[in-house]
Image 1: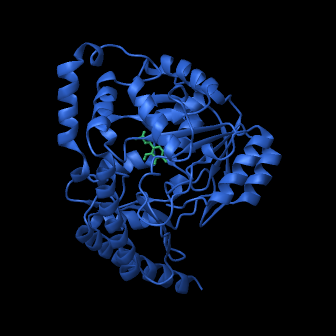
Image 2: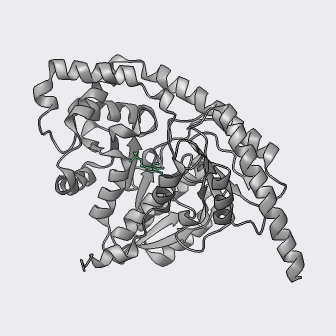
Length: 402
Ligand SMILES: Cc1ncc(COP(=O)(O)O)c(C=O)c1O
């Protein structure tokens, strides 16, 4: 029998990836994956950009490239982040294969076995999986409707002496919550005081449908060591596998060495095509279209939940991103509900796998970006009926045992 490395025994297969295998069948109305709307992919503009690059710079686009990334793309990211409140130079940018690779490189660079990583509860599943691969000890920090609670975080920082604080501060995956500015500032202060690195994972920051922008944590407190991760997955296309890390030059150098051993560099053709696209097409207009489409879908989902789910259901009301988080009435287990929902050809992700420990089994995550409003209404109505049935049977069972 093949002996896997000891560290693999800590790692579970991603429950979401496993569920997605079943739920992405074409006849299923799936709210499970964090998938962008395919009709919003700028396919024609990307086709033109690829063709232009191959016509004019094929030798470089098809060749090995620098590990740090394509210069003009790094410069574009530095400029955009500076406008969003994180002042950065191109040398502070590392182009990655999606922000997922950024999480992996930070973990690889900073975490020794047994180091503590503070995470939100619930948190982004593939990050938890990644930290486990590097044999980190995951410590959940309590969250409320605005994200990580400061009192809980401060206690954990003082008592656990963590190496890393991992946060999705804007439109969090899975809950959709956003940390307000004052909390960001205090978290950055704490990180500076206790010399803990913050990993600020921000794939959704550009997808705001209402309310005011909040600046990245990385731009708030210059004394704090913050690695900021961004992505083109949700704004252009996840298939491109393009993201970036923005950090101090020293950290970028360390991440670059880690990346050399991982994949040498991110694909030259994708990087150059996206740099060409960003220089030639109206990215702002594209984002406006995306925000308007997803904002409508979010409204449709919130209204459908309100209409279709029984009393006792609680849910988040995000101002952006891709997800709504639902807490079912007491006694309704989301995993049991998924079995019923799949029979009705509706899918979602149960919330339990998102918790590093002590899962709340009555929770679930719904994605709203991937289906138009009419299908959202239909799917949520079917799901609401399933919740109703489960709730009635849970109440009957409780009466019988009383
Ligand atoms: C919070 C968070 N971080 C990172 C990622 C990875 O995104 P990508 O690697 O496509 O940039 C995702 C994807 O859904 C996510 O939700």
